[in-house]
Image (cartoon, rainbow, N blue to C red):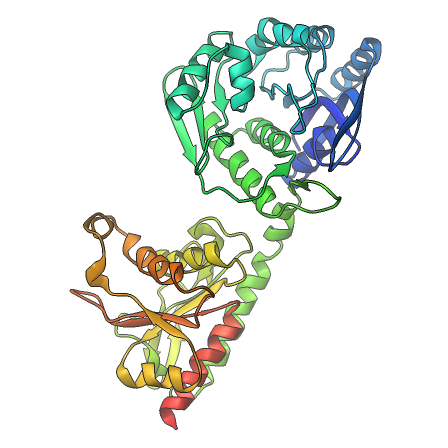
Length: 446
């Protein structure tokens, strides 16, 4: 088990600071240790007061932890003033802590000052030269460099400037820019851009979760680029699952990572059960397309195809029934994952889909059962979409959902050159999808 040290302030509300750091480290399966630099009185509404911890206490905490257990990685957060910054920097050098992530916490989201002017100067001169990575947001990057940061190119210029202060690498976080956020990593040899869709929630503690996650992944041996990727992924999850525990801002929720991982067994079980239900339905094989079918189910808060399980080799027609060569697995179906992930962006409760044949009688059977089935025309697909593998289906599903309001029971297209006509039946889980497919089959037989 790796040992990760957080040196930061205490958040009485539990949403940020040492509390958020320790939750994050624990969720990633490692051992968290803490040195508290300041006691804050805060809640979801903001920071009411700050009580700096005396320097001898900070030093004693660091000595107690590092003289005995050492640290495979560390991160710093709120350090309050210049003397605390210098002390922390000296002690980290004394104990030769190498994998250090510096989160240059300066101002709370409510505007409360968390690092005074002398502290900012000490941070630049004393601590940044010891950092493997510095993770400023745009206001912090502007404060450290004196630059006006309003674009991605401005972020890159700020990253260059901060790295000249001595840090090995800089991650400038772009959440304050308009549009979908882009983070920029500069390691001296080049830039790596990380983009994601805006979660739509302003959550407290995201910077702490990110820096703690990156420090943990670095301690586990991940490369810098991979540690940043994993840290951003966990942070995005924590934002999507943000909890309203008080009267003000929501708190980022890193615990969702462990809860979500625990869902993997349930996802596989539900797919197996739905497949068995379909297999037991007389004549169900008649709904399987020539190119075969698949049934997929996503984890909560799914982000990419690795979060979506389906059947390897697809579901095939075997006379009047169905068969699958192997049990369901995660990350094996690009097409079904594309459908499910696109639908989940509109309504995260719809996590399952299955493709079946399209014909006029099948479409009529759907409507006789009161199902809402909407279609798109592949002929309207933009050229650039068709030229990129895997984008066509997501484009079509997105086109339907944009004007649909609520998620329909199914989305169809009549095919095209080399494309078989198809309906994608949608549901909240595989059981719901299987029930809809069985209703269609029984309507056809009737």
